[in-house]
Image (cartoon, rainbow, N blue to C red):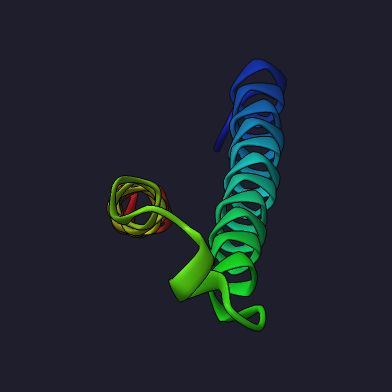
Length: 83
């Protein structure tokens, strides 16, 4: 039989896990929106001809960076769900 203190601890762990998951989802959404904004900037008419190669390279680097962050966040989310 579990004690009241153990039950309270288990409830608190569940709440903390829920808060972490909400934070992860918010961060994931933020990363997707940032990546989409960069892609939108690149597909505007004449963006590729009017931007310097360095600017295009930087924008592509940002997309790659955001994808790496999404991958790390995805692994974090999987780890927390499996615990």
